[in-house]
Image 1 (tube, rainbow, N blue to C red):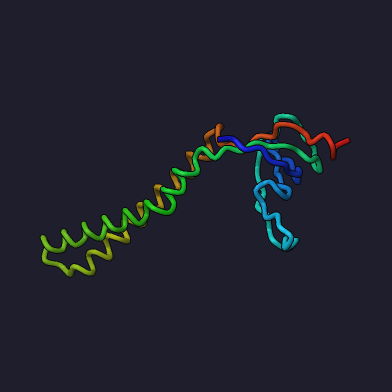
Image 2 (cartoon, one colour):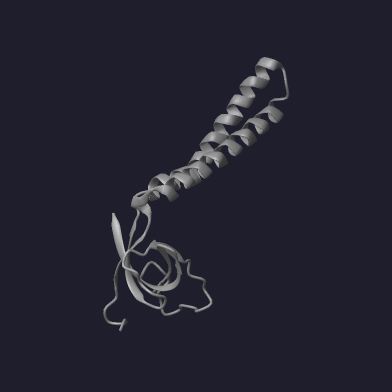
Length: 143
């Protein structure tokens, strides 16, 4: 699903622009809003050649959110559990300390899950469908 939001162009980086989302665009927008809270910046394709200071409407996709959440939060626990079970099985066959082998299996599996997360991150970054895109300048605030 694609979502449209407003942002202010903070910096230009070649074909991309760095945007600061404005209130109501997925940021904290309540009466207790503190200006000291850091809002994450968004790098978006600048197909319309917006300038620094322009208020723009940009589109984001949440297409990879569920898969990304699974890979980041659930997969490491599953792999660590399987690594610990495998370590116990190996220790029984080789006559080694079960706790040590289970810990080693879990640790090795955790390292493997970090590698998977890094590869997934590099894949997501290269997917053009998931990169935010500036659609238009916000007409009321631009000259």
